[in-house]
Length: 370
Length: 256
Image (tube, rainbow over all chains, first blue to last red; front, side, top):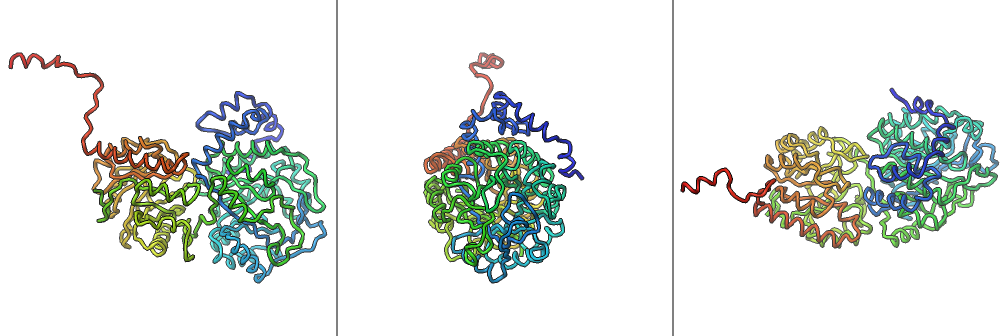
């Protein structure tokens, strides 16, 4: 069988970077006006040469998004279960070497948080943990999914990479979506950012989407942490991964996120700063490259940016998020994974979406089995 | 008048409920379309709540609900979804759609036939969304579906009747109503399908995503009526050249 790693190994970071930088205005025009787009077109769309075409890209992106998804925005919310973590990650507030109080929610606490999320109208939830296999391993996750299943139509999960059999087990309990961000496809620098813990294994992480595909996951989310490395090259590798996965695991849906490194207590300054215009460029480039991919934006971004991005290609949004375990009810004052930027409530966000002529969608899934 | 499973429809425009910028606008547009059969994705409906947003905007007696199974990937899930829909929406009508491919949402012929067979036996009025495949349509007819719904082009693409040659064969051969579903991008596409002899069309994206959905809904209503009227009046045949005189047989009139 053909795995992504085999494809990945045929590429060199430096060559890809050079190839993106050498794209011309003519390459961008071709990418904008062709009817079938490939990875070379994606390179052109994320290249510096595309910046003068940003308005045109936004127009095309809006049109493609509305045709495919209509004037709708899907609403989801993260539920942080634990900040215990055995990994050292240079950019994360939950890093093992960060001296913070550690907390893992009990069943009772989870239900208290869930009650709050339900009162906020949420029906699609994203479970988040650090990596602590003793306390927050597969049995814990399995128990949580079983516990909250009655309250949500769609359950997503953003936790440590797991084995294929673990995924199969969790899917059977009602897990619908798994987000697993590569953080960076720069293999050497990945080791620098993840010096200790299971996460330091680049190979195991990059193979995760293959394991998820084989387990038959309904939807998976990809992305890199923007700020760690050159975002253009990292985004090309994300697109390469997506392109491979769509052909290989053709029954799975895909979504992309573009988290920009945010400040947190004791944290790393971004190595590369991505401007707002560049983030718009990247969002539009993904949309133009893959009409069907879901594009998600979190509360890491600020109000003005989030208000304006709705019409440009985004299909899913969180609001009122807390990035600390127990943040909604149980322990609102505990330390966050990162500082959120848009603190408006889901109600206010929903109203803002409506005012822009879009419908916030709270429920769009169901489990089609007993 | 169009009749499906002994139910009569004065409008031959069926509509979808997705992609609208608000539920109020959806309701206004569907009312303006004159549509009497509207399809709604089961996955969008709150099954365990007293009132549901979408359903409350579809309560006008003009609308008959056609729940659809969007999101299912095989026959087993489709049968499960159908039973949930029957219970929640209190109708045994069902738009059976099984598209395991989330990219182009193309229907799975094998699973659809399997599910249709089972659902008909369970007492459902089944309207399957399928490729414009004339043999599949006959096979579905044999298991007892109430209508067939072949696609004009991939769903949501607005590309029109790319499958026209196969739609003509399906319409010619079918013993059940033929509803052209998916791909109809403009009123002229809808009129064309009706001129071919389709019994109805189903439109969603072209109305929901237009700049003015209410006005577009009216345009589709008129186009469907005009197309049907033209079909009933029999279109004059097309020719590739003008027939000005009778150069080959003209001599016969002299003899006459």
